[in-house]
Length: 221
Image (cartoon, rainbow, N blue to C red; front, top):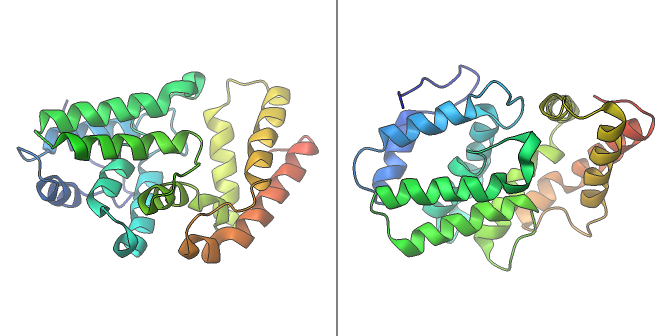
């Protein structure tokens, strides 16, 4: 697949990927894999799960990288976590993304234990329930950081999610989306790490409550 250029609204850079690929370490320059990832995240049906989301996840990682047990595995998992995304067949997106990561890393001659670690981190993003490890907590918290962003960014996210599920009738979407957000809101704690809890917990709960109220009133972002 050809090497694509990232969209101008993201901070995804080949230089960052190349540095990561060498640090793993993996064989070759990783350029083909980078191109595949950029193409995947640039698919036209992606309104939220795109390069901007990936770049925002990496920016969150940069602030907490020193807290990670294996920051390389965590970063690779973030690059691949939404590599496969189809809202009409969402039950296996995470598993397929994990498979894609395993294939790419295996082709690069990466150690099997590292590959399994990456796979496990990606699969966590299906339900966002971390195990007891620090990297699992960071993986889930980074992916859920959007819930605690300032209102304009959060509502833009909610609008983008609806665009990704435009094939779902409005009445069904209102019920389904409300259920998803209620599940998050009912958790005793949304964020597993002190960094994300202190930064985003209170705002995320306000955002979730506001969105649920809108959905209950038959409105969307």
